[in-house]
Image (tube, rainbow, N blue to C red; front, side, top):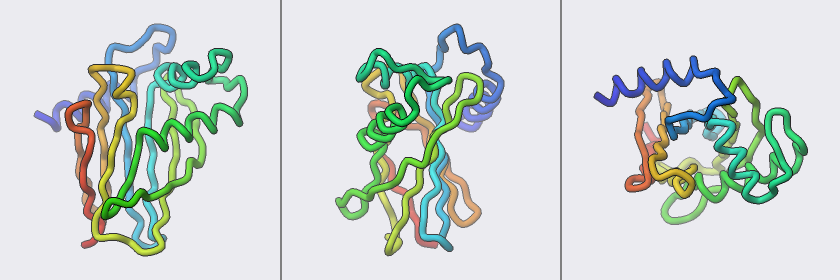
Length: 168
């Protein structure tokens, strides 16, 4: 059943192009790929542009996205929002990451993040609270790729944390 949902959502997400009418689904998709050779996580989050714009405008009503009214300020606000709502920990300690940037495609904003390890832990914990305070129905899909395997998780307000195994 979950696979059917992912197929439906992937098809719908890639074909959704009606940006002037809101959307009925409250979903984000985050893909995390562990790169052993660089000791890093490559992270891409796909968000509805109007959702992230709502977050930005809650802080500064004069800002708008796609096109950005002030790219530097908007990037900083989005980076700060990710730091508050997408958290990685290992053995109880926070692991920092870098917001690399974003791009727009139709009504989707793709955000790029990178987390570098000095020493790779065997597992990490992820808290994904993207938009959970904004939408009661929010669901956050996480795809985790490691050593050629892909696992998918469906997170929501009642289940917003997962453990990701990095060691083989």
